[in-house]
Amino acid sequence: MMDLSTLPLPVTLAVCFLGGLLLGYAYFRALRKTTDLIIGGGSALLGLALTFGRMAMLAAGFYLAVLMGGSALLAALGGVLCAKALLLRQPRKVGA
Image (tube, rainbow, N blue to C red; front, side, top):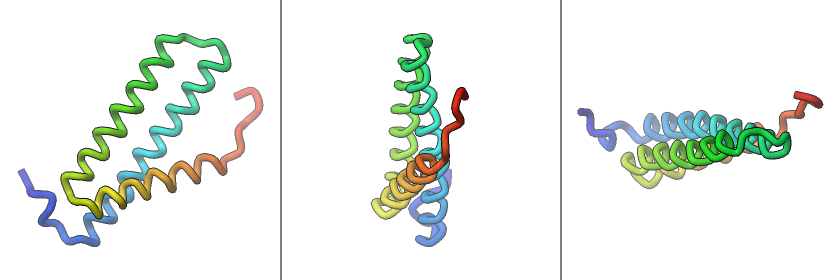
């Protein structure tokens, strides 16, 4: 297996930032789905599964980033926060 810490720093940071963007997008979409389930009176079991899935996905993503170093972890966190900002700017459709 390839040692991830041997990659050049700019490549590592770019990959971790993009990974953080994808991770954040998936996390906050699942959060929106969970809140829609709670508000709409949906399945509590599905909401619980989405919650645990979100947490596990985020922990696994950050664990992979920390294997690449502290700066990679910060880049992944920056990607997650940018994804949050982008998703909060999207207007929600009424009735969707």
